[in-house]
Length: 458
Image (cartoon, rainbow, N blue to C red; front, top):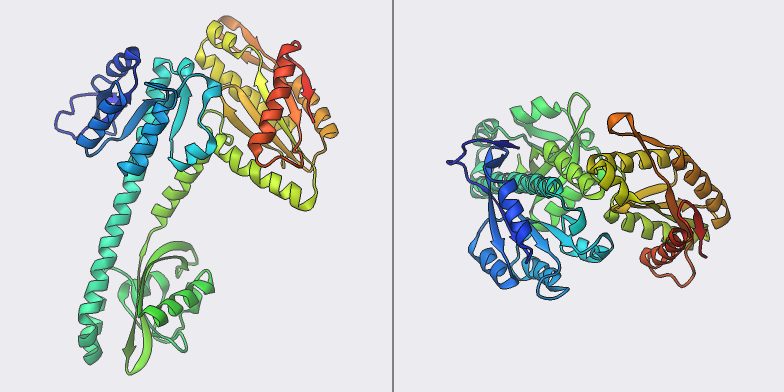
């Protein structure tokens, strides 16, 4: 982020929706004159659902929506999210929800179904966190748009190539010389192989340079998965041509790369063959993987977030049920965490959260899974672990956390404890949410019986 004169640059647009006038004023103040990636940030306001919908219909490119879940009614905000995604078909815009309290987070299926980028409790949204939440959402939106633009460009290139091939196929069949002259000038790798044997009948300069293809070689060695070659041949046999096939190929130097492939059936010297062209999309695939990782990772602690917890938790429950294995689940909450934030500041609070996670990772096994549920609450999945053994591990973890000291200002240190609720799935539990409700009951009991303890509910 920077603050500079960018009057000639198209701005990012952030829509703030909610009745809290202080939030609207704060966002105007925070982002006045600010830029991201060299573009200014423009703040629009919607103080009601009708006003927000009017802005959404009038504006063609809104990057981020900061939305209060409670406006006219308790569910007005979430109904507006549904309108945004389903009725208005605004799919790439990032949505950050402001909820009433840490425990009021939307259900996981709503987060996934409507692609909600983030949610924060009102009590958590200081100006600094408002700033970081909006910037993180802008970064995610920027990456989505970059991927979409790359995909569109690749699609246009591919379509252009297919149109050229379709328009010129008959002429190319009549003149092998003309075929070679046209394909040799293409910057895209293009090669022709015999359907029956896979022998290379022709390879242009780009294909020869990248894949080492020559007319005495077969094409089998260029595919990381031989099944991909068969999939392309089968598609051409059924439909004459295929396009937008993603597969890994092997370069002449041995490294693998992702390619976006188009192929069309033709003849060469009277022999049935396939003309194949492709583009290297390795950078796009790497960006997609990075976005997937970001979507499943808690930005502060680096462990799984609530979305990943729900996916992994349901998977472990199904596995335990299928193989009759034990599974224990801990719900951890840092005691008096609000007091740490109030007395030492949110920066020390963040350090405390990260220190607690590092302590857990040192105490837990490699097969155990820890994810951040939200705020100062964390969940530990312990596969193949009976509740009795998990209780011993939870007590060991509780003692280890109590020994952690976090450096603070003026040579002070912050010590903290955790309360732990422990449970295991029952036969009638349908989802991880059922188990977490029971773990929350155990955590509640631990809190109200003095904190810094482990309570088990089975």
